[in-house]
Length: 449
Image (cartoon, rainbow, N blue to C red):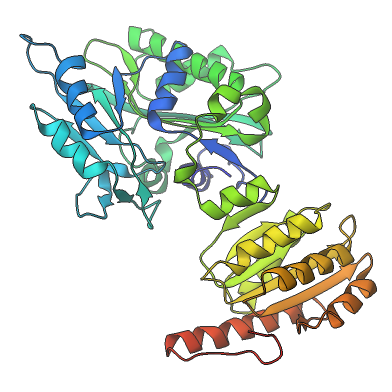
């Protein structure tokens, strides 16, 4: 999956540049690291960033401001303090303790201690993270005085079949808004991965983002973009986003803020990066599912879905919505799931309070229907199934699976086809929703619920 920023750019730049295809949904995973880690990796690739240090406690933040970012007897330098959570829009966010803003300027002694104490240990609510994310660290960075704020990113583009260099002269603000209201200010350069980032493309992008051709800042931006692309390839990135890319009054070109994602499939060769993954910033169910090789993404609905195959999973979610329901998740158990994986999938759905009913949709090709049936029955026997269960099975060993289900002693709702399954799941979910709204207890006869 690609960030919402990239999706906005794709849509808005359609009539002004080669269109970036919509990102795949489902079995796509990527590592997202904190800003201070992104900065460290950029420094390792020769990319200029402001000087900065990370703090885990308010006292450590104050020490960094007073003794590391400033020196006794010298004029006091302003420092920016940033909450380290994996979300965009931190500056406009609000902590659950009422403190507003995840990015602030420190201008005097004692202020770092004060600000950090209101950030560390608190959950920051942003537009991208409406449920809040726990801030465990803050990043103190030297203040940069900017003559010009620009935007640069490199991301994977399905239409061109390779990386795409994206830029805009309007950086330092919501790039989503720029893409929506001023798409003419979004510039793209497809990259042929077999030949690499070409000099003329980089020169053109440096000009398009507002730098004077042949000037020192223009040359430095060209060098920086080439280094970003080297990092993109060398670290197996799926996205490198810089906002803002700053031109200083002295003519330097510096990365002031960055978001970097990495391909999970490359974990085996990027171990030093993946060791720094912050699981506290991820959905616990998604983390648990990944341990069992399950492709799980939590959504906002109330119909839990367990399906084999990403395409069938997407179709299942589509027909649920077509019938008036809302899926609670994307869950692809894959073509060769074991009974243990099936059990774990059910545990995840069974323990989700938002799930009112579970819809199982399995097409038995590589995955045998009787394996799914045995997994379901094992869960029912070991932990019990707390949710009404609608099952649609087709394909390999489907008759054996039906016999197992019918003789297991648990009543499960069998469907003839996907449309029938979706209608039944939506109907049950609506009954549960209405009962919850009026705070009435509900029991499904024959299901042991």
